[in-house]
Amino acid sequence: MAISIHLVSIPEQEAVASRIVHLPEEGGVIGRSPDCDVVLPDHSSRISRKHAAITLTNDGYFIQDLSRNGINLNDKSVQGGLQLPISDGDIIAIADYSLLVSTLTASKAAEVNKEVDVDTLSFNINASDDVDFLETSTLSSIQVEPMTNDFSTQNVLAEDPFSSDPFDGFEQEEISRFEEPINNVQHVNFSEETEPSSTIEFVPMNRENDDITSSLQQLIALSKENQSLLQNPSFQHDQLFAALEQTIEQFLDEFCPEQLESQFNEYVGNSLFVNKEKRYWRIYRKTFERRQKNGDFRRQFKALFIENMQRGGED
Image (cartoon, rainbow, N blue to C red; front, side, top):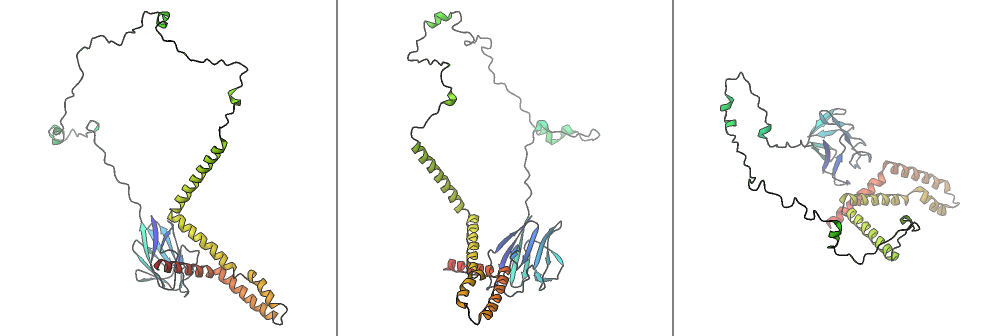
């Protein structure tokens, strides 16, 4: 059994990476935290970091509320700590999000029809039964066709023309007179001084051509591999988000306090307001570290990135 969550309704001011999230077989966590299986960005802070949990039991999937603001399951409020069963087609409402539950059950294997062999059937006959089994319509409908033999009975005792040897009675010398001599045959005599074959090295006629051929084969193999990777949608998706993560790291480096501190020191110098500026600088460092730890920069950058991509696709 597998479960997936479809985001059918999303707030206008929020942006998500994907509207369809496939959860592990044992379930997952829904919330605002980037560590959740289903991440719901929320600038209003109405969604908890871990808002709800979906777990798999022997009776199926259940959902449990872990938040302070609660959730709605099919327009019914779910109290905190209470577990309710969920099935395919249920709607979970969290803040302004609407989530559709979809479960897939592995189909049973189809039964294979086997042909019945009449000769191998086993009949269970009850001798105490008054019904005469010889009068049943099942056995009477079976018609046994007589076997026909298509073997010929003619010339059975005739002699086989291929059973005797036509050269029987001739000596080997008499037969050799009728054989044609084989000319242009060169006999090779191997002596003990001949160098063993294991030490003989066969040098190619043109090593440069072999190197070019090997290089071309490697290039063709690499081009085929790259072509197959580019045609894979999951590979393109992974490459896109890998580039996105790298862009985020570069984006954060531009605002990192360690990067800006050296630049600010050039402007501050030995001014009278050095202590005041340093106090502001400590505030900035704490604010930056807190926002970076909470993942605010990453969510803001991804939301802007996805929004711009959607606008570009509409244009």
